[in-house]
Image 1 (cartoon, helix red, strand yellow):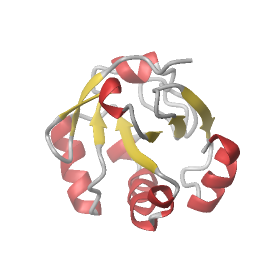
Image 2 (cartoon, helix red, strand yellow):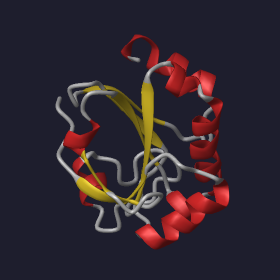
Image 3 (spheres, helix red, strand yellow):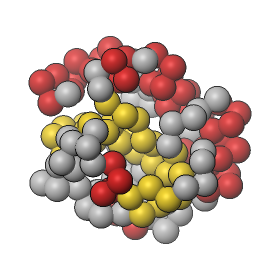
Length: 147
């Protein structure tokens, strides 16, 4: 399945990010509950800092239903520099089937789920977690050969 098209604001840079713009590199999309979930922000920061994704040739892009200003402030507070996409309209989250998926199961926010896109923008792996924090090595093991 090819990942649905989207165009959202990256709260860390202010730039627009599109599905087409992610092509050419493997990308791990992290759909989280965002600023209402401290563990989600720690997760994004730890994934970025560990360097394990970068070593595997995978870019990290986080998505939440927060607005860009609120998400940008949280990213700065946690030292997150990788893209954090603001999806307050829930259009991307809905298209990707992530509302209420994983985490606490709140129907109008993303849960705690990951989706790996390959260089062509095809979905290669997807997993929702009930845990609010997944260790990087577990995440990489779960991705297995898809990564």
